[in-house]
Image 1 (cartoon, rainbow, N blue to C red):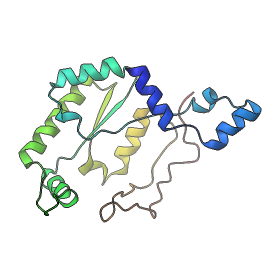
Image 2: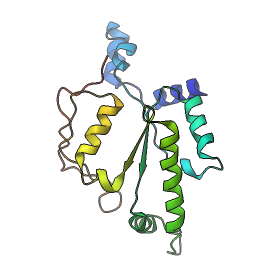
Image 3: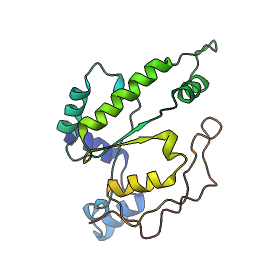
Image 4: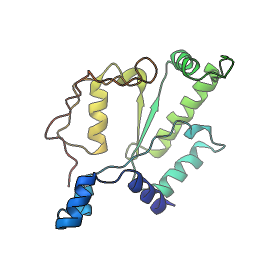
Length: 181
């Protein structure tokens, strides 16, 4: 499964068309050389909703994604998370359909235990309530992921007024930011 998933990730995130065309015409750089510094990833927001235990979930990740790093993001302000869910997701008649604060707490605990089970080399737990106020948490995270000489200036606020994009914040990650060879 891991090879198939990696192939899918590669297919949905190919090198830019310009790079593909240059490889086809000149043969340089090869796609392997271009992708040498590429990190592919996926996001899931319902991983903790499976019918599995923390150990089963961790074993699944270790077996199918043995070289991966897992960023486990929680939001300890469960009241704020519930308000966000209710604001964003409503039924057609306008009724709220979000989980209870107890359920959100249970999901957070599952994810915290998953991070512990995976260990510090494979998983890093971050709390949205902390990293949205402290860019250094994200800087530490990108260093843990393996990037070097990278430093965000500010945290970008995505989903402005619902689904809007933040076009004003200068992340300033740095011109020398790179992934080690």
